[in-house]
Length: 63
Image 1 (cartoon, rainbow, N blue to C red):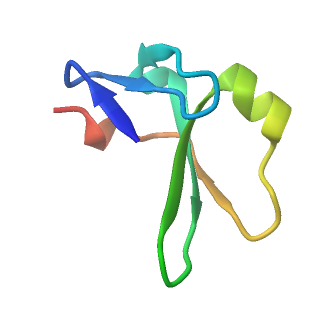
Image 2: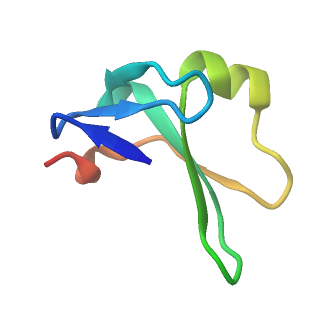
Image 3: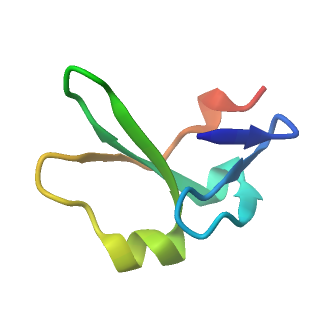
């Protein structure tokens, strides 16, 4: 996950930069945590695979 300028995040799929309020975090808890930031368009294409959780509010990551 790349936070840019403190209040933007780069989508891990399309690599575009969006305000942090416009992206979601796809997570899977395993022995190694897996996190991917996705914009709305990429989230629509990928969906939420079985075993993953979706966190829409990641504003706490803004710095």
